[in-house]
Image 1 (cartoon, rainbow, N blue to C red):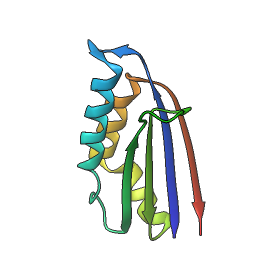
Image 2 (cartoon, helix red, strand yellow):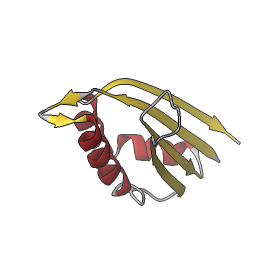
Image 3 (cartoon, rainbow, N blue to C red):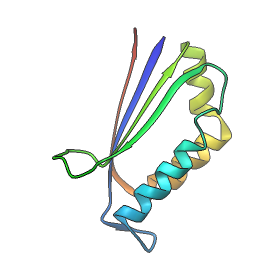
Image 4 (cartoon, rainbow, N blue to C red):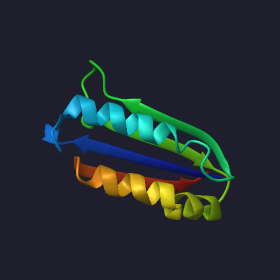
Amino acid sequence: MIKHVVLWKFADEADGHTKAENMAESKRRLDELAHLVPGIQDFQVGLAGELEHTHDQVLIVTLDSKESLTAYATHPRHVEYAAWLKQRVTQRDVLDFEF
């Protein structure tokens, strides 16, 4: 099993939208990817709330294999999302690990 964890910080404004608007749109787009490829066991998207935080959004995906992670990362819809997101974030941190 593979755990894929991604954390983002969003720009205060990007592409004519506020941070909150871009975060909400990012969550909507990510939620559409939850069943993108076989092998995704669990898919969670979290947005920072009122608690103290160092990032604005998190994605935690559990996959059954390295091959499923590669299939997810290279899927055209994921690649399209990543290109859209790149213009709206100031930082991206990723950790993939086996368990």
